[in-house]
Image (tube, rainbow, N blue to C red; front, side, top):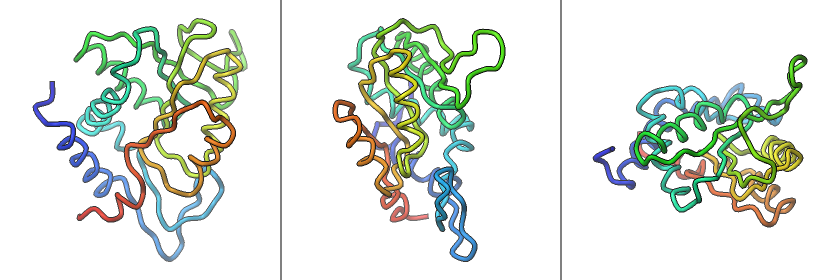
Length: 195
């Protein structure tokens, strides 16, 4: 297990995001998956593939879900959530002997085989937690919730690494009042952190 406290782990991951996962371009900006243009881009996908930051993410996420029952499933939308989900479920087993079932929600069903939107060994009406890398408008999270509910799964929480603070969490809460939405970091906190 990590010898760092949760607060130290949180600070270390914040610094990694600030140093290697945040891009600022005040001239041309970036087109986001929401089709919005922004001068900020959070590249959580890349840092979630790094062993150290992946471990830190899993450690912090486990703190949020550790009180959940062992029957919980943990998943998210391809591609951003996939490495985070696998890190979290592997960490939970290796560090705490907890076997949470991972799953992936596809953007499009497979065109062959079972034509599934969701991959994973899930049971109907199983309780689930969705993971997101970044929430901007909430559109992709709402899509993931809709696909999970149609399976059907019972969504208890959505946890994201970064809330861009552009109304996404509020949009999700407006449509799905019974689902807790939690972010590890807000974009304003990352921007204020010292480099």
